[in-house]
Image 1 (cartoon, rainbow, N blue to C red):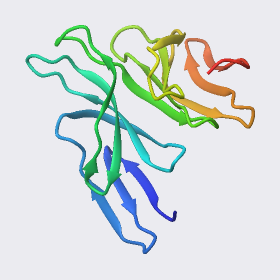
Image 2: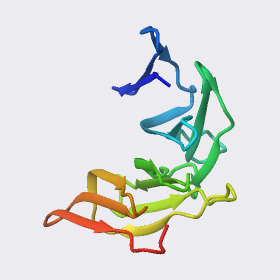
Image 3: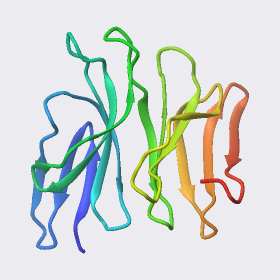
Length: 169
C-alpha cells in the first residue's frame, strides 16, 4: 500500500505514500517495544511488554495499530506469575502463509530459553512452549514457501540452526 514502517531506538515511524513521516506514540505503559510484524491483511501488529503495576503483573501483549495514533485492543500472550517478575521479552515475530502470527520470546534475566506461541486459525492463541534452550539474542526467523519456520540464533557453542518440521505450526 506504499506505507513504510520504521522502528528505531524504540520509536515507531510511518511514511505515507505521499512521503510524509509521522511519529506514532506507544501506550504509556509499554516497556519493551522491539518487534512488529505486518499480518496477512497488512495491518501492523506490535509485540510488546507492559510494565507491572502495584496490582497487575508485567505482561507480554500483541497490540494492533488501527491507524496513526489509534491503538486497538491488546491481546495478552503472557502474564508474569507476580508483580516482581518480568514478562517474556519479545524477540521475533512473523506471519505464515495461513495468516497465523508467530511470536518468539524469552526471559533475558533468567533462563535463556526461546519460547514460541502462535495465533490459531480461529483467532485464539496457544501457550508459549519452549523450542530451544540457551538462546542468546538476537534471533532471526523466517517462514519459507513450504510454510516451515526457520530460526537462526546464537547458542553457547556459536551459531545454531533449527526449523519446524512439516505438520508443525
